[in-house]
Image (cartoon, rainbow, N blue to C red; front, side, top):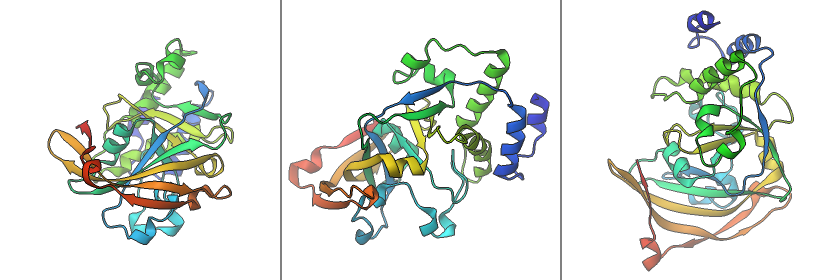
Length: 277
């Protein structure tokens, strides 16, 4: 199996072809699933050149709907193919900012997402079990986990390596294996989330990749903020610019909820947030 993996042409194969290849190789593989009930998932996006009238609803911080986005902005990502809608988030704002990696003087928008119903559970898969075992958010669930077999352990380690690989600009094709695995892990209709360590935070924090349909049906955004980024060789500094004083919730279509913005003034601008690079 190792030789076949090494010889496979990931760069020139489609995600669909890689998915079929992996599916055959991991047939019968066992891995843990879990019901999670996270509250307070962070999303962030760069809005430096975004028009004001495009920031009037929480749709502006929802997952991007690529049907509405120029194809030149479609790209491969950790869990999603070109033009594939997907909700990337973290339960730690610092990880979200590091994953976004804004430039100095960029404006960023941050949204905090919650469950509509307190009893909602998200059936989830892991990708990166060994790294997540040492994470304080996850080790309570995984600390006693033992692989059913040596083969299961080897397959999981290979899956983990693809989710934890640092990808350089121009080498986005290297996302294809983790995209293919994400598709496999989420193929079951009952599985709605992939939990994996944040590469940008050196695996210290956790990312949650969630199916768009689940987000539309069961999540809502109740807080939004805009910050200006000051960045040097050691840290990000987030300077408060404005915030959603009120969000007029649309219960039928939460992403259409209207934001009432208010500017930060005076001393409020001094309440900066800092994250080390």
